[in-house]
Length: 417
Ligand SMILES: [Zn+2]
Image 1 (tube, rainbow, N blue to C red):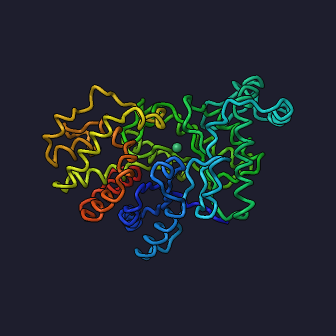
Image 2 (image 1 turned 120 degrees about the horizontal axis):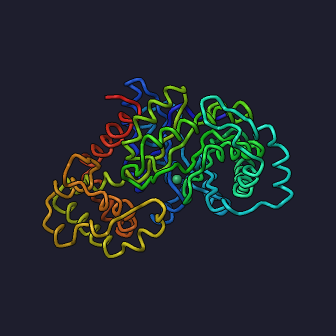
Image 3 (image 1 turned 90 degrees about the vertical axis):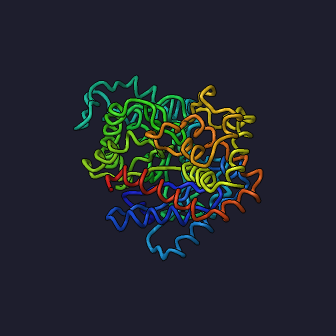
């Protein structure tokens, strides 16, 4: 039975060159006493935009772990897959993030809803979960509404799970269920009944990615009240614990935070709350390492700086097309983007400071950072030049990638220095 470690981190490496630097950050954390399981994730969307295959991620993960003599578990995550996209991931992946966002809100048939409701009586009325405010407020009507919104999605997750299980075999992969890419956050009460549905579908879910309150925009700070997030997150953790005991879900079931990179204001809360409840966490990051490639290229100057400037100019031209697939997870103020004329004059430091996620630096520009986050398609369209520059400037870039994952992420989440 594959069991995901207590702490794990989703690492995105769009162009397949930073796995070694990312792994160095994981190894460094382990030397400091924090064992984190690396999980290399790449979504179908990213594969399609870049033109890679899931097997490419497997090859890289196997190679970088072998080169580093890394003898602990690591995984390759088929990120955000559904019934239509799962097939090509099955061979290469051993971690599956089953995304049900598209099915939420579609109504299951009456018979299924009635059957589900017949088993929920115990959890309505005066149900009290110690440590949460969940109590008698849960009415049958409320649960019926939750079932109408989520039951169909849960059965779809069950179908995807069974499809994978049939080929890979029971216990040979990690299952995550994600529902973060939707407009409305799930309440803790919804989370409870969703977990019950997943359990009755016999999905051994080890991580679950809800949509939390506030915005988790790509590559930038959390937008919302960190204290409210902390309350919601803690309630959700208690729900998870309750669901494990009540519904027989895997003991190590934990929260997965999607678009989890760069959310510095909530990391201290996450760190202290998981410690308090002795829970694990999966923090999924993706484009943050791609941004470090651009920062490293800018720092390298000359041709590399020219390349990233051109990439930025092209992203200004293609802004609508680049942003469309990410509408729910970016928030770009177009008037705050520097113009072509300005950027033409920029030197290395100015360009990298605009992009590096250091809010103390007055040149930092979160709008430009989000635009570049989604602009990797442009690099993919000039892949030969891009890879040549990545390789020529590898030392500078991998130092940026390592520093970002270790210092700005791992150290802040786990309270290391
Ligand atoms: Zn996600």
